[in-house]
Image 1 (cartoon, rainbow, N blue to C red):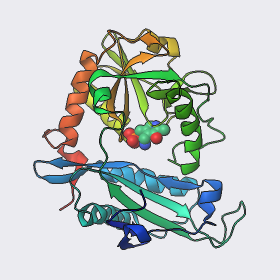
Image 2 (cartoon, rainbow, N blue to C red):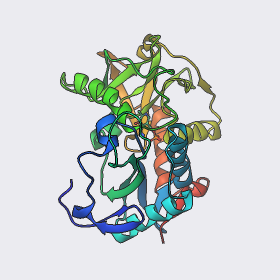
Image 3 (cartoon, protein in one colour):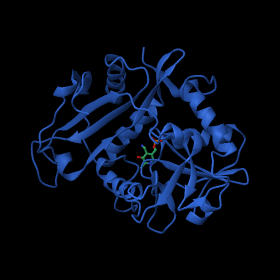
Image 4 (cartoon, rainbow, N blue to C red):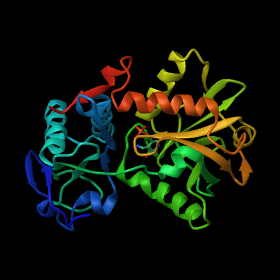
Length: 305
Ligand code: PMP
């Protein structure tokens, strides 16, 4: 990943990809306090457009506020940095990764005395859970690892260190042949995937867990809007794993995962064991929106040129 051509925005400047390095005593590398985003840009009929860019920048800055990281750049500077990265790498469709981290002036738990840094990279990245997964659905297993507890992790921040929990869960289930992990909260209710929010459909009503222990996903918010615009009922509530077993349809959402149907959870077939009709409809509208084919959702796109 580090050995390639292209440019990375590093503290206000575009630098050659191979030169965008940090010191081994970088505070965030040791203690995990950093905030990042995962954003996608898509090749639309009117050129490359970034999906929901202001919302991603907002979540990034909310993270710096939550963690009291004194951000030296404005949201406007980061926004134009993101656009510059897409343009300078001549990318049409891509994944964009901004990260804000604590520097290497001083080690020790307290980050005081350290500078705050920002890097933004972008590269081509296809379907996160595979093209087949998008069409046919994936096999999911509930992890033995519990999702974050509200008083130990502040999950409105998309924080680097939190992903240890995601990696443990993902490693555990993929080692046993499943495609992705589902994590439960500290009380045993369904929370989210290792990098996705979850939805289920029962009797025509669409359900998703409330926001206590899961990330406030930007795709999740987009899907909620699409569901409401379709005239379907949307309920945010606590969900048990057996509610998902007996659902008609289920799917994951995320910038990387987009809208990926779940065909199986814990070896129980969900519905007919394939992409359900409501999932298919929502997925089609989502792809129309991100690829700029939908007049209704044009405001979700930021064109890079
Ligand atoms: N939950 C977790 C843990 C994630 O890492 C992600 C991906 N950022 C999501 C949910 C989905 O969030 P979004 O739709 O904003 O990408």
